Length: 382
Ligand code: 6PG
Image (cartoon, rainbow, N blue to C red; front, side, top):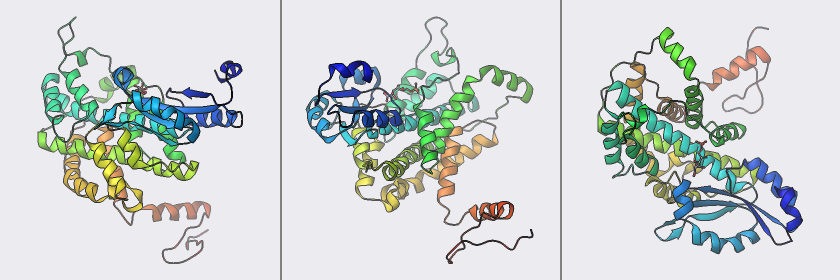
C-alpha cells in the first residue's frame, strides 16, 4: 500500500496505518519513509464497533511533527474520560502499535480469566448461564466494573431464539484469534519477560480449537470434573487479583520494551488513555495510572503501595479458587498462571541456583556466586 500510494504523496503528508499491525512492520515502514518528508504513523485503535461510531481509544506512534498536526483531529474523535480525550502519542515509529498489541494481550488474559470463573460456576457448581450473568452483572456495579465483564454478563443472559437454549451453549467452543495475543507473548519472551497469563490465554484458545481431539480425549481420558463450592465474595476477590496480575504482566512488557526500543513508554499515560473507549476499559485503570504516577519500586505495578495492599487482600481468594479448582479437575489456565507468576516473583531466593548448577555440570557454563565476583564452577566430577 505504501508503494501504491507513494506517487500520490508529497513531503509533509501523513500516512496512517490504524490497523492491528505488527509493530516490527511499523518500524520497518517508518524507516523506509524516513528522509522522504512523508510521515508514517502507526496508530493502535481500540473500541470495536461502538468505539468506531462513538469514540475509540487511540495509541499513536510517529514523529512529533505528525502528532502536532493530528492531535486536534484525534482528540476530537477520541473517547473521553472525565472530559480528557483517550489518545496520546506514546513514542516514535512502532510504539503505538506495540502498546495496542499488549492491550490485546491483556484483553486475552482478562477474557480467559472471566471464562475460567464462568467454567467453575457452570461445570463445577451447576449454575445456569443466566445466574452467572446476574452475578457478573452485580460485580460490574462495583470495583470490578469493566467493559469485558459487562458484556459477559449481557451475553450470559441471552437465549438462542432458534432453540431456546442459552446462547453460550449453541456456540462452538473453539476460539478464534487474529494474532496480537501471540505477538505479545513472543515479544515478552524476546524481551526476557514471560507474560504467562497472556500465554495461558493464547494457549487456551489454541487448545479450544482442537475440538475433535478434546472430544476423543474426554472419551478416552475421562472428562469428569468434581464439584466446586462457590463463595461469590471469594470469587470476586479472585477475579480482582487475576485482573491486577494480567495487567501487571502487560505493563511489565512496556518497561522492558522501552529499554530495547528507546521509547520511554509512560505506564501512567497508557493507563489513562485506556480508561474509556477501549475494550480493556475498567475501573482498575485509573488506579493503575495513579500507581505509576507514584513511581513504584523497580517500576513494577505489583510493588506499588496501593497494589501491594490489594494483592495482600485478594490473592488468598485466588489461591483458594485455584486450589479448589485444580483439586476437582477444572481447567483454570489464566487464574493458575497468574498465581504461579505471583508466587515466583515474591520469592527473593528461589530455585534457579539449582538450574545454574545443572547447566554448569553438564555444560561447564559457569555461575555467579552470591557475594563474590566473577564466573565460578562447581566441584562436580568430570
Ligand atoms: C480492540 C480489539 C480489536 C479486535 C481484536 C480481537 O481493542 O478494539 O482488541 O482490536 O477485536 O482484533 O482480537 P482477536 O480476534 O485476536 O480475538
